[in-house]
Image (cartoon, rainbow, N blue to C red; front, side, top):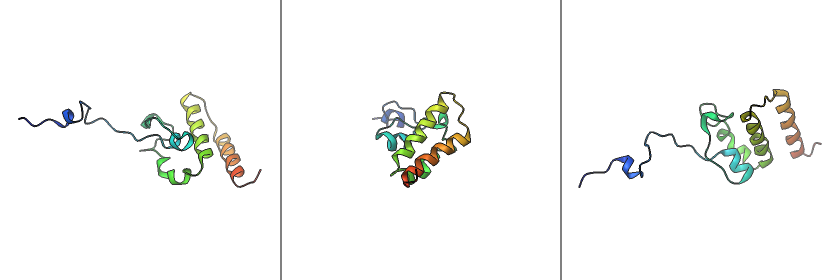
Length: 100
């Protein structure tokens, strides 16, 4: 009996195809997620920048929701000014701290 190739063992999957985890902010914000879009994501910087702070986001679904909304806006071609993003984050963080 001939040994099967790795591709055959994987049901014909391409062995050199990059595997992406589930999207960090979608999981935290929505409880379910698609696969990470990889380099197509606004938060991609030699890997998922948000995965590096996942433990900080885990208990903050409202922050993850804001990040997800920003990603969708950027993907749609909208320009988000730094001051606007900062203001939106400050608002969310101030609400968390009870500072209105």
